[in-house]
Length: 150
Image (tube, rainbow, N blue to C red; front, side, top):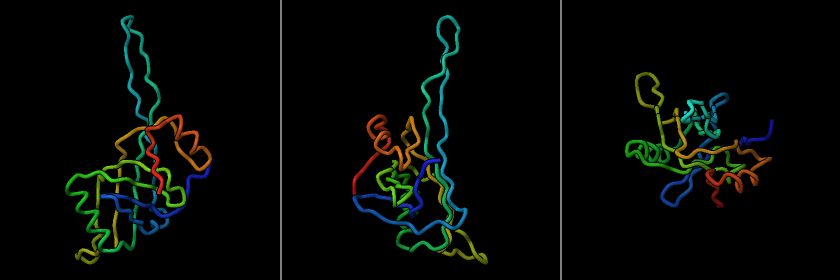
């Protein structure tokens, strides 16, 4: 399998960039869910559409700075989108995402600003899974993957 990256996630909003802490061990789940519609022609033949994929991510963090957490809570409450780079060592692979779920982990009945569960879903789709090995190929053949230079 090709290298996808291991760096901490990054996100950008309002022209600023933020680096998240590294997720806990086993706390990073990234998937490319297939989305495929099926069409029926006038001869009643079923025709599948082109294969497209949507990035989804689930991250669990132990220690998140309170300023970053407050920013994420505000983005979640307003339903804003942000630019998400799943791996800082491959930060040219970025997606416009919406925060589907943001859970602050309670400890002893109190809200602890250290624990965070974050679920994201990309707004755009792609035809290929970008990796460190094929980033340039995906960038030029499938421009739906957002590529931003920093």
